[in-house]
Image 1 (cartoon, rainbow over the protein chains, first blue to last red):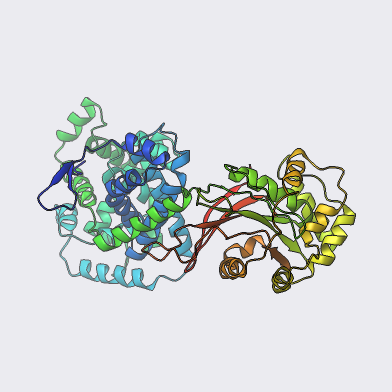
Image 2 (image 1 turned 90 degrees about the vertical axis):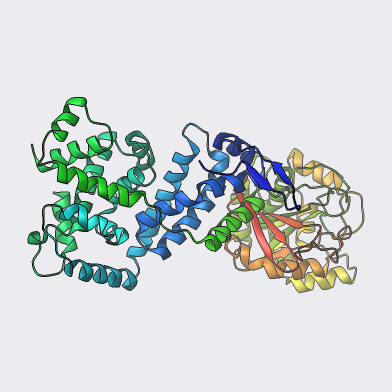
Length: 224
Length: 303
């Protein structure tokens, strides 16, 4: 997974061998109170946990809150982790739940920053020439804000897409993380991706009147 | 084929989960290629991880590790955990577990509602722990109710006695400061806990009997003002577990074996002082008292 097998021990000119332990070994050690094992485990998975939170939450502040909550939940829940699933899968489940909880909390408070970001993104899209045969791909390649696009997806589409395309979980693992039937996961990933492609490419302007995307209308259409 | 079915087909091909025939169908259809490539572009855009702030990462992992340390903080009771009042005292008893402390404290809670057990991590010290109690200055009905609550916590608990409840309530009207004064003056006035000990209790359990037996010997309990000061600074952390009017009787806490001047480089006490509070709801709350901070190191249902 790219983590180092060697680490400098702080003494000049010396490097001590440090055998990289598997997640399972680290978990077992951590459950026995081995703090360095937990530290290594968290460092190994932090980036992807944060990435999942960032994509699911859709903004930095909520993502950071969710990431911290997830790390705490992992530390607190580790004694109960029975190893039936991979640690990575379990940690994604914890992270996803933390993100969804954060989103629920977010609904109860104003979010002016995200609205401004969405307006900027939509304005940028309006300046682009779209509608050609390759517009879908071009729109994505042009780097439109993926987070802004994701925010237009309902959570129940967003999380499966992120877990599939960012966390690289297979359908069965996503089903386990989200506690959904695999068929539902498959369907949501497909529809979520399709909707996301359209949002990013802004290729379906004809579905919307004026220059502003009606998010509710899009989501309603997605759910129909 | 509906639009949804087409989306699912393309997505399955993208994920390598489509059948060979479906793959052939998609790859052989020029009209589907742009859609497939668009989905691929979406996937590719999502695989690019967002930038990670290294400072934030370190901060978050440090916070999580601090939580891990707190959760795994050993609470080794090395000393006689019981000092039950001015005329009762504790006898040293090494190696008693927190559960034992909790059981002792819970037995106190029969009358006063909330018990406190104190332990130190200094396993070399035979005089560094004790138990105390939280007295209740509310009505005896409240105390009786608290006794019911405590009774449901564990088998070591006995039901509250109405006479002792009354005695306790009267004594419990004293404020902590007065408890300190009383101790400093060497008064033999019964503490709330002592009142309970002196009250007849036909339902005393084996644990309580053992505590009572152990408390027949030893020095008088002394309220250490430093303990009161430390606890008051941390009291807010357990405010949820304390009812209005609850008074913490720390008269049994003995810091004689703990050097409060001995600190770690980070300023924390070299010998942590951990108080195990048994709340009315039956939770065992480990409260780490320190000079500069206080932390609830764990909060678990009482076994």
